[in-house]
Amino acid sequence: MTSPDPIVSARRSARIAGALYLVVVLAGIFSLAWVPSRLAVSGDALARFAQLQHEAFVFRAGIAASVVCYLAFLLLPLALYRLLAAHGRVAAVVMVALAAASVPFSFANLLHRLDVVALLEQASRPGADLAVLAAQAQALLAQYNQGIGLSEVFWGAWLLPLGMLVYRSGLIPPVLGVLLVIGGCGYLLDFFSGLLVPGYAGSTLAGYATRPAALGEIATCLWLLVAGVRSR
Image (cartoon, helix red, strand yellow):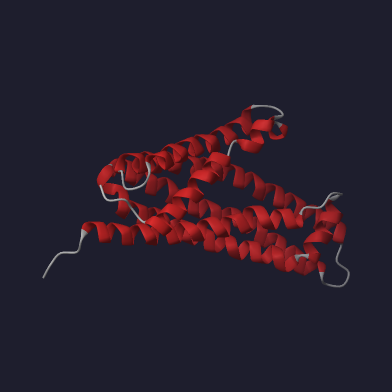
Protein backbone atom coordinates (compact mmCIF):
# COMPACT_ATOMS: atom_id res chain seq x y z
CA MET A 1 0.00 0.00 0.00
CA THR A 2 1.56 3.30 -1.09
CA SER A 3 1.58 6.40 1.10
CA PRO A 4 -0.26 9.46 -0.20
CA ASP A 5 1.72 11.97 -2.23
CA PRO A 6 2.61 14.84 0.16
CA ILE A 7 2.03 17.43 -2.55
CA VAL A 8 -1.42 16.03 -3.32
CA SER A 9 -2.22 16.00 0.40
CA ALA A 10 -0.94 19.56 0.82
CA ARG A 11 -3.04 20.77 -2.12
CA ARG A 12 -6.12 19.14 -0.63
CA SER A 13 -5.45 20.84 2.70
CA ALA A 14 -4.86 24.13 0.91
CA ARG A 15 -8.17 23.98 -0.90
CA ILE A 16 -10.03 23.15 2.33
CA ALA A 17 -8.38 26.18 3.93
CA GLY A 18 -9.21 28.26 0.86
CA ALA A 19 -12.87 27.24 0.98
CA LEU A 20 -13.11 28.16 4.66
CA TYR A 21 -11.32 31.44 3.98
CA LEU A 22 -13.79 32.20 1.20
CA VAL A 23 -16.70 31.71 3.60
CA VAL A 24 -15.03 34.07 6.09
CA VAL A 25 -14.36 36.69 3.41
CA LEU A 26 -17.82 36.63 1.82
CA ALA A 27 -19.75 36.45 5.10
CA GLY A 28 -17.51 39.15 6.59
CA ILE A 29 -17.99 41.52 3.64
CA PHE A 30 -21.75 41.00 3.81
CA SER A 31 -22.12 41.48 7.55
CA LEU A 32 -19.44 44.12 8.19
CA ALA A 33 -19.63 46.19 5.01
CA TRP A 34 -22.74 45.64 2.89
CA VAL A 35 -25.33 45.46 5.67
CA PRO A 36 -24.11 48.63 7.48
CA SER A 37 -24.02 50.50 4.16
CA ARG A 38 -27.60 49.41 3.45
CA LEU A 39 -28.75 50.54 6.89
CA ALA A 40 -26.82 53.82 6.96
CA VAL A 41 -29.11 56.84 7.10
CA SER A 42 -28.54 60.41 8.19
CA GLY A 43 -30.64 61.93 10.91
CA ASP A 44 -31.41 61.34 14.56
CA ALA A 45 -31.78 58.05 16.42
CA LEU A 46 -35.45 57.82 15.52
CA ALA A 47 -34.70 58.05 11.78
CA ARG A 48 -32.03 55.38 12.05
CA PHE A 49 -34.40 53.14 14.02
CA ALA A 50 -37.06 53.60 11.35
CA GLN A 51 -34.52 52.44 8.77
CA LEU A 52 -33.79 49.38 10.90
CA GLN A 53 -37.50 48.59 11.00
CA HIS A 54 -37.75 48.99 7.23
CA GLU A 55 -34.71 46.76 6.62
CA ALA A 56 -35.28 44.33 9.49
CA PHE A 57 -34.67 41.27 7.34
CA VAL A 58 -31.35 42.68 6.07
CA PHE A 59 -30.30 43.39 9.65
CA ARG A 60 -31.18 39.84 10.74
CA ALA A 61 -29.40 38.41 7.69
CA GLY A 62 -26.28 40.32 8.73
CA ILE A 63 -26.40 38.63 12.14
CA ALA A 64 -26.79 35.21 10.51
CA ALA A 65 -23.83 35.95 8.20
CA SER A 66 -21.75 36.94 11.22
CA VAL A 67 -22.48 33.60 12.89
CA VAL A 68 -21.41 31.74 9.74
CA CYS A 69 -18.29 33.91 9.48
CA TYR A 70 -17.20 33.26 13.07
CA LEU A 71 -17.82 29.51 12.84
CA ALA A 72 -15.73 29.31 9.66
CA PHE A 73 -13.06 31.48 11.28
CA LEU A 74 -12.85 29.00 14.14
CA LEU A 75 -12.04 26.18 11.68
CA LEU A 76 -9.84 28.17 9.31
CA PRO A 77 -6.70 28.42 11.51
CA LEU A 78 -6.88 24.67 12.17
CA ALA A 79 -6.81 23.99 8.42
CA LEU A 80 -3.94 26.45 8.00
CA TYR A 81 -2.10 24.83 10.91
CA ARG A 82 -2.23 21.48 9.15
CA LEU A 83 -0.82 23.08 6.03
CA LEU A 84 1.87 25.33 7.52
CA ALA A 85 2.88 23.98 10.95
CA ALA A 86 5.90 22.15 9.56
CA HIS A 87 7.43 25.53 8.70
CA GLY A 88 7.22 26.96 12.22
CA ARG A 89 5.28 25.10 14.87
CA VAL A 90 5.45 27.85 17.51
CA ALA A 91 4.21 30.47 15.02
CA ALA A 92 1.44 28.10 13.94
CA VAL A 93 0.30 27.56 17.53
CA VAL A 94 0.27 31.33 18.15
CA MET A 95 -1.71 31.82 14.93
CA VAL A 96 -4.37 29.32 16.04
CA ALA A 97 -4.53 30.72 19.56
CA LEU A 98 -5.02 34.32 18.44
CA ALA A 99 -7.65 33.44 15.85
CA ALA A 100 -9.54 31.10 18.20
CA ALA A 101 -9.49 33.67 21.03
CA SER A 102 -11.31 36.17 18.83
CA VAL A 103 -14.31 33.89 18.22
CA PRO A 104 -15.96 33.88 21.71
CA PHE A 105 -15.36 37.62 21.94
CA SER A 106 -17.00 38.14 18.54
CA PHE A 107 -20.01 36.03 19.52
CA ALA A 108 -20.37 37.96 22.79
CA ASN A 109 -20.23 41.23 20.88
CA LEU A 110 -22.93 39.96 18.50
CA LEU A 111 -25.34 39.89 21.45
CA HIS A 112 -25.66 43.68 21.05
CA ARG A 113 -27.18 43.15 17.60
CA LEU A 114 -29.48 40.44 18.93
CA ASP A 115 -30.66 42.87 21.60
CA VAL A 116 -31.52 45.32 18.82
CA VAL A 117 -33.64 42.59 17.19
CA ALA A 118 -35.55 42.31 20.48
CA LEU A 119 -36.13 46.07 20.41
CA LEU A 120 -37.46 45.84 16.86
CA GLU A 121 -39.93 43.22 17.99
CA GLN A 122 -41.03 45.46 20.88
CA ALA A 123 -41.51 48.35 18.44
CA SER A 124 -44.13 46.35 16.54
CA ARG A 125 -46.37 46.14 19.62
CA PRO A 126 -49.15 48.67 20.23
CA GLY A 127 -48.20 51.53 22.50
CA ALA A 128 -44.45 51.10 22.08
CA ASP A 129 -42.38 54.21 22.83
CA LEU A 130 -40.35 54.44 19.64
CA ALA A 131 -38.18 57.30 20.89
CA VAL A 132 -36.99 55.26 23.88
CA LEU A 133 -36.46 52.12 21.79
CA ALA A 134 -34.56 54.11 19.19
CA ALA A 135 -32.21 55.54 21.82
CA GLN A 136 -31.59 52.08 23.25
CA ALA A 137 -30.89 50.66 19.78
CA GLN A 138 -28.44 53.45 19.02
CA ALA A 139 -26.56 52.77 22.26
CA LEU A 140 -26.42 49.03 21.55
CA LEU A 141 -25.12 49.53 18.03
CA ALA A 142 -22.49 51.95 19.32
CA GLN A 143 -21.32 49.28 21.78
CA TYR A 144 -21.27 46.72 18.95
CA ASN A 145 -19.12 49.01 16.83
CA GLN A 146 -16.72 49.50 19.73
CA GLY A 147 -16.48 45.72 20.04
CA ILE A 148 -15.70 45.43 16.33
CA GLY A 149 -12.92 47.96 16.85
CA LEU A 150 -11.46 45.87 19.65
CA SER A 151 -11.73 42.76 17.46
CA GLU A 152 -9.22 44.40 15.13
CA VAL A 153 -6.54 43.56 17.69
CA PHE A 154 -7.16 39.83 17.14
CA TRP A 155 -7.72 40.21 13.38
CA GLY A 156 -4.40 41.99 13.05
CA ALA A 157 -2.38 39.89 15.48
CA TRP A 158 -3.24 36.51 13.91
CA LEU A 159 -2.12 37.73 10.48
CA LEU A 160 1.44 38.30 11.73
CA PRO A 161 2.31 34.62 12.38
CA LEU A 162 0.21 33.57 9.37
CA GLY A 163 2.13 35.92 7.09
CA MET A 164 5.43 34.71 8.50
CA LEU A 165 4.47 31.07 7.89
CA VAL A 166 3.31 31.82 4.34
CA TYR A 167 6.60 33.59 3.63
CA ARG A 168 8.70 30.75 5.07
CA SER A 169 6.82 27.85 3.57
CA GLY A 170 7.41 28.44 -0.12
CA LEU A 171 4.06 26.74 -0.71
CA ILE A 172 2.35 30.08 -1.36
CA PRO A 173 3.93 33.12 -3.08
CA PRO A 174 6.04 34.90 -0.42
CA VAL A 175 4.67 38.28 -1.48
CA LEU A 176 1.33 37.22 0.00
CA GLY A 177 3.04 36.56 3.32
CA VAL A 178 4.55 40.04 3.26
CA LEU A 179 1.15 41.54 2.43
CA LEU A 180 -0.49 39.64 5.31
CA VAL A 181 2.09 40.95 7.78
CA ILE A 182 1.59 44.51 6.50
CA GLY A 183 -2.15 43.98 6.78
CA GLY A 184 -1.85 42.73 10.34
CA CYS A 185 0.18 45.81 11.26
CA GLY A 186 -2.47 47.95 9.56
CA TYR A 187 -5.22 46.51 11.75
CA LEU A 188 -3.18 47.14 14.90
CA LEU A 189 -2.29 50.64 13.72
CA ASP A 190 -5.95 51.36 13.06
CA PHE A 191 -7.03 50.28 16.54
CA PHE A 192 -4.30 51.99 18.54
CA SER A 193 -4.43 55.18 16.45
CA GLY A 194 -8.19 55.34 16.92
CA LEU A 195 -7.69 54.92 20.66
CA LEU A 196 -4.76 57.29 21.15
CA VAL A 197 -4.87 59.88 18.35
CA PRO A 198 -7.65 62.51 18.52
CA GLY A 199 -9.41 62.98 15.19
CA TYR A 200 -7.91 59.83 13.69
CA ALA A 201 -11.30 58.50 12.55
CA GLY A 202 -11.67 61.39 10.13
CA SER A 203 -8.13 61.19 8.76
CA THR A 204 -7.04 59.85 5.37
CA LEU A 205 -5.03 57.09 7.04
CA ALA A 206 -8.14 55.68 8.71
CA GLY A 207 -9.62 54.97 5.30
CA TYR A 208 -6.61 53.02 4.11
CA ALA A 209 -5.09 51.35 7.19
CA THR A 210 -6.95 48.05 6.84
CA ARG A 211 -6.88 47.80 3.03
CA PRO A 212 -3.60 45.83 2.85
CA ALA A 213 -5.19 43.20 5.12
CA ALA A 214 -8.24 42.93 2.88
CA LEU A 215 -6.06 42.64 -0.21
CA GLY A 216 -3.72 40.08 1.37
CA GLU A 217 -6.50 37.92 2.79
CA ILE A 218 -8.57 37.87 -0.39
CA ALA A 219 -5.50 37.11 -2.51
CA THR A 220 -4.40 34.33 -0.14
CA CYS A 221 -7.92 32.90 -0.08
CA LEU A 222 -8.10 32.78 -3.89
CA TRP A 223 -4.60 31.32 -4.22
CA LEU A 224 -5.37 28.51 -1.78
CA LEU A 225 -8.71 27.80 -3.42
CA VAL A 226 -7.62 27.94 -7.06
CA ALA A 227 -3.90 27.13 -7.17
CA GLY A 228 -3.51 25.12 -3.95
CA VAL A 229 0.21 25.06 -3.15
CA ARG A 230 3.37 25.15 -5.20
CA SER A 231 5.80 22.23 -5.42
CA ARG A 232 8.98 23.07 -3.54
